[in-house]
Image (tube, rainbow, N blue to C red; front, side, top):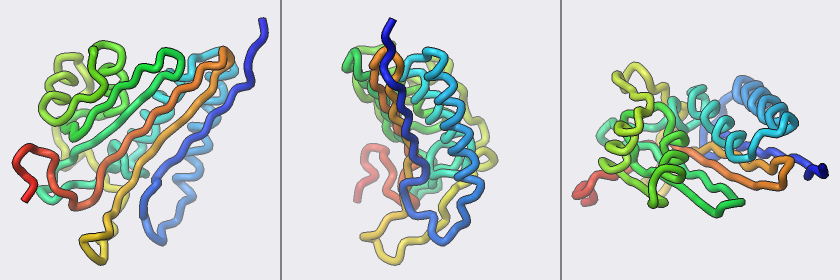
Amino acid sequence: MTTSPIALVIHGGAGPVRDAPIERETELMRSVIAAGRDQLRAGAAALDVVVDAVRALEACGLFVAGKGASPNREGDYELDAAVMDGQSRKAGAVAALTGFESPIEVARAVMERTPHVLLAGSGACAFAAREGMARIDDPAGYYTPASTYKPASPDELASGTVGAVALDQAGRLSAATSTGGVLGRISGRVGDVP
């Protein structure tokens, strides 16, 4: 059996965590790459690898995604994530998701268990609850915002995101991304836009 070359690319913190040392982030990213490489070498599907990588980046609290998310103007944590499976051309995403640990897991469930591509706000939350996704009962105690950078003007936003792209031995390509939003952004709830 002929196998394709494998590849894995991840990014963490594509946003301004200004003038901060990055040793912990670099070490964590190396471990995520090593784990993903080992999965791919063992024959894992690209989709599983990218979701696992992004889940690890969400959980660490070092990036503006997942546990390291930025609160909006009201102090709430609304998170977004998206995943795509190149082989099937299916995609799933969530926007303004609140109260759940892994937005990328919810996005994957949207892709695999619904006819939809995107669920947002209360619809995304209701879906995540119905699917039994891990909840956050104490947002103030759970989140550890990775960025406390205050923009100099309303035109500049402190943001961030994490992501992964993988190519597996079968030649399948998948991508996943997750963001903890923009510090101080307007809430995604209907009617909140001034």
